[in-house]
Amino acid sequence: MAETENGSCTEVNCDDSGFTIQVDVKHFRPEDLLVKVIGEFVEVQGKHEEKKTDGSGLTTRQFNRRFRVPKEVDVMALESAVSPSGILIISAPILQPDKSHTLA
Image (cartoon, rainbow, N blue to C red; front, top):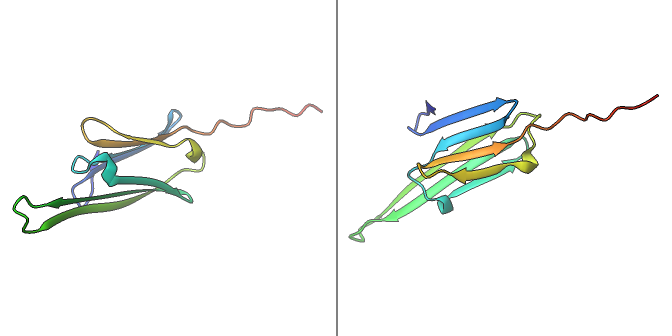
């Protein structure tokens, strides 16, 4: 995985088996994350707030990432899940070409 400027690791793959994005989100709970499709992009947002145990303040951690989705990807079948090791995995299959034939 490649490390970004804020220290999180991200990997994006697109091949015949499908489209996959992996984002290191180990500092976030699944309920802190939002994945949505906007046009030709997948947007990932994370926001985690934590109150200090002594009640003296609040720590907030957040990020926003956008990934362009290739045209051949079926965004309607996009799925996301967080692995036990804290990696958000977003995946979608490649659209199958239309195999119908016109008989003349």
